[in-house]
Length: 375
Ligand code: ADP
Ligand code: GN1
Ligand code: MG
Image 1 (spheres, rainbow, N blue to C red):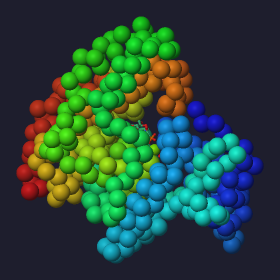
Image 2: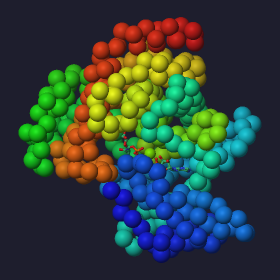
Image 3: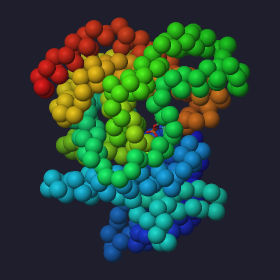
């Protein structure tokens, strides 16, 4: 749950950032599971301007300096490429983080909180549930362009802001440890869910092994490409800006595609408890493949393309064991709204895995058809 900040504290933290204007008000914003996000209104030369103030979750991101260094390199590169391509409205298409008045990348408060501020991108909204096939297509094309733009990021390898973030085998080990420790005494109440996970152990090392053998290349990827991490234009629906850049780091293109399948090919929310509503929507999946390959066919290799369907199943499974592991650990990672929230989320993800398993042949056929058109 978000620890709510007092107005005085919001004003004090905002004053530490090198953004001029008079503080009007601030309020909690968005539905992310990790950081504490606030919308801040400032009065600048008689006009109201809005910003996003975020407390970086340092229990999860242990090196906020490295994280901000990554984000600044990535956003500077994006801006540079957009300018080269004569893009319009670059200030709406790329996040811009403001330094503190001392020139630091984030502000450290007396409680150890790390705060950063960027522009609030107006007239956009995020979706927790996919609304249309067109939205799925635009979202997937936008994440593919994001990957493409970062292929030639100059300089050293980006920092791994969370080591082994999509190392599914290591996620599986974490899950087994949570199960064995059973810290919250909840294991007995979710035995069928635990069995579902244990029966699928063999999924975990597949992508990691293909990366180790060099069949799947390391790329710079977003790694948290869920639907609500993209801002869509309120009136046109256009994909305007990819946000939540904390996990942009070396990874596989399939991590991003897989997370899009997980979050945008099901027309129920990730925490829908009525499991009859949780299933793969093939029209949405088809649109994701169309949108993604319209941009990514130019740089993906055949092994990556052959694992698009698998990645959807894998990343959904990985998310399921992460939620279930957090439930078993007593909810130490994700923000929750009620005690069973993580269990509901895990069951939801496992239901989606089962639905993908039941439709794999049709999904593979869609990828074959669309990839043939794109080559
Ligand atoms: P978390 O890591 O907690 O998911 P996000 O960076 O995704 O944090 O921010 C949470 C939510 O805040 C987003 O889903 C989005 O709705 C909103 N948001 C974040 N940054 C912006 C921005 N620059 N402009 C508009 N909305 C934003
Ligand atoms: C978290 O930060 P947010 O809410 O966009 C999580 C993702 C999960 C997602 C599940 C850093 O994403 O990995 O897929 O929840 N981010 C982190 O909704 O763990
Ligand atoms: Mg987010």
